[in-house]
Each structure stands twice: as C-alpha cells, then as structure tokens.
Image (tube, rainbow over all chains, first blue to last red; front, side, top):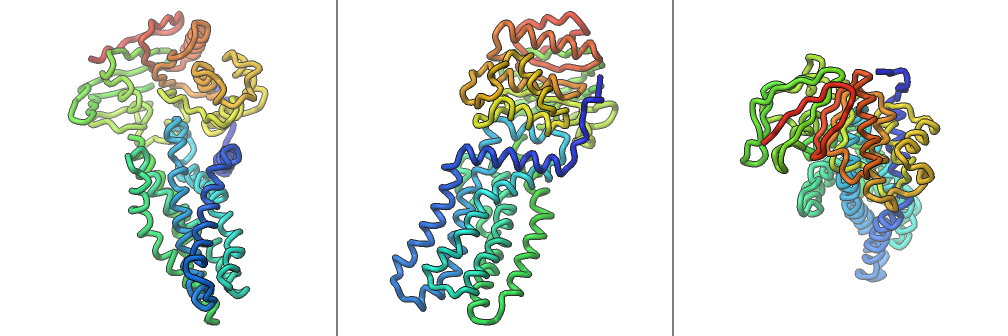
Length: 232
Length: 204
C-alpha cells in the first residue's frame, strides 16, 4: 500500500483542525451561541429589578450573582459540547482517528469556551455597572471570569462525556458537575469581594489559575476516557 | 493481518456469539452476514476498537488492538451506520476534516478528485443538509480514497446507494484488495468482487 501520500500531522495541527471545525459550525448555528449569552445577560439583569435600587445591597451581591449566572450559563451550553457529534457519528470517527483523544477533546473544549465562555467574560463588566461596582471590582470580575470560565468548560466536558446518550442527560449533568464548580465559584466571587474591600484579589486569582492548570492537565484525559465509556 | 481469537459478545442478557476465531490476511475480504440482530454491527465495533469484547482478543500483526490503539487507528478506517457527516458543513469541508484527522493527504485537488470520483462533482460546496441520504454516504465513502489505511471495516456500505455507486464501491474494494488491503464488511447484498479472496462468516 502506498503510504507516501500520508502527511505527518502534528498534535497542533489536529488541535487547530478541531477548533476551526467547531468554530465554523458555531458560526453556522449562531442561535445556539446567542442563547447562552442572552441567558447570562437576562439572569444577571433580573436581580437588580427584583431586589430594588439599594446600591449598597447590590454592590455586595454583585460578584456572587454574576458568578452564579456564569455557572448556570456554562451549564446550559454543556449539552451541546458532544451531543451533536455523537448523534451524527462524527464523534465515533474522532475516537478512531490516529490523533490522541485528549488533544481532540482539548480542541473541542477550547472552541466551546470561545463561543460560550469568552462572550460572558466580555459582557460581564458592562453588566457589573448595573450593580454599581467600582472600576477595580469590574476589572477583577472580568479577570476572574477569564481564568475561571475555562475551568468550568473543562470540568463540564467530563460530565458531558459521561452523560452522552443518557435519557435526561441535561439534568444529570447538572447534578454531576455543579458540585465540582463550587471551588471555582467561591474563589471567583471571593476575589471580586476581596478587591472591593481593598484586600487585593491576588490570592484568589492565583488559586483560580492553579485550578485552571490542574483542569487543563487532567480534564482532557478524564473527558476522553468518559467518551470512550459512553461510546461502548 | 487481523486475528480474532475466542471472541465473545454479550448484549444485555443475551450472548450473541462466543468462541469466534478467524483471521484476515492481506488481499482478503471477510463478508460477515447473518439476520438482523445477530451481532454483525457489534462484531465490527469490536474489531475497530469502539466496543470491548466480553471475552477473547483481537490482534493486529500479533499485538492486541487495545494496547496499540492509535497505531492501530493509523492502519484502519471504519465506516459505520452513521455516516459521520456534519449537516452544516459542505461536502468538501466534511471530507477535509475527516481526512486531516485521519492523517491523510488533505490537498484541495485530491479532495475534489475524490468527490468527483464519487459522483459529487458540482456539489462540493453545498451544505451536507441539502444532499440526499445516498449523496451523504458518498461523501463519507470518499474518505476511503484518501486515507492510506490497510484495513477497512465497513458496516453496510451499500445502504442508500444507487446501482452505479454500488458498482463504484465494489470497484474500490477490488482495487484495495488488489493492493494488498484487507476488508471486513457486512451487507445483505451479494458482493461481487473479482480480485482477492472473499471469505464468509455466518452469524445466527
């Protein structure tokens, strides 16, 4: 068999191929992407309406509300990460490519974060203004979300992989994944609080960074194993 | 070469088959047939490594496919019930992604030639959702032209294909066997392959 035609395809190439594919798909199914963002905007905006215009109260609540809304929005988009690929058989093909599965999973998670996590990071400072957050609070809010939302996508990938093809997978994935989100929530919201009270958010952000590194290393392997189990 | 020893498949409480032994040598085609529900697809999913056998072992050139994993995937192409085609991507994009991930040569000309040969000339840039079922299967089969793998595992490759396409795929299989490739396939149709050895396994 002639093997001269085969091209050496690097890990980076495989990663880029998956990211480009998923971004193209997201561009052609924009409604799905916008749902997450609108959900986040609406949930965050409902709180000031329900609680009333008491600035001091709103300021105290802001970090928690924005972070919980980000958690729920990320939860909402998790189901989309693998299920479409599972239904049309492309996931099956992905498991059978000679590329290492963790790299492909990482590509999918990164693309998923770009379309469902990054928009939240960008819009959060604008929403924070509704809660009368001071500039340093807004800055730390955006930074903590920037470091924290990829962790949510990475951990979520494990849950999404495990619940593939399961009836009522959406509810199950929340039960599975939300408890694991708690540390991210505590240190993400805590960082903004600390920055506003003048303590400095460095400790919180460092911990979030540590979570991100840990998740980057472990989650793609765990999610890959979860996918293999689900496909059997 | 592909060797299977003492393979057992259990689905739920039912044992579909047990103690299955066979091997596929270069230039051989193994035609698995049997009634619906006899475990053809289960067998093929085990052979490509998607499912784990209840018992027994599958070896590729003497090594278990479980331990080879990615090295085995380099040598094998699986074509399942699901075509693995993204509705939102065009035929060309679908093929490009599939070939790139499979480590094949994804030069634009080669992709267009392959689609042309599968009878999809002029439809390269249409989103797959406007293609018919048969045309989608043709896009998926175009992969076989571009991935230099030695073992093809094909689950009902002729489904939804018209007479010309079936002929073309048989021609493709024949060329592959002639070049020392191996094929395992299931189909309810008669396989008419001039080149290579055709062997049969009956499941019931």
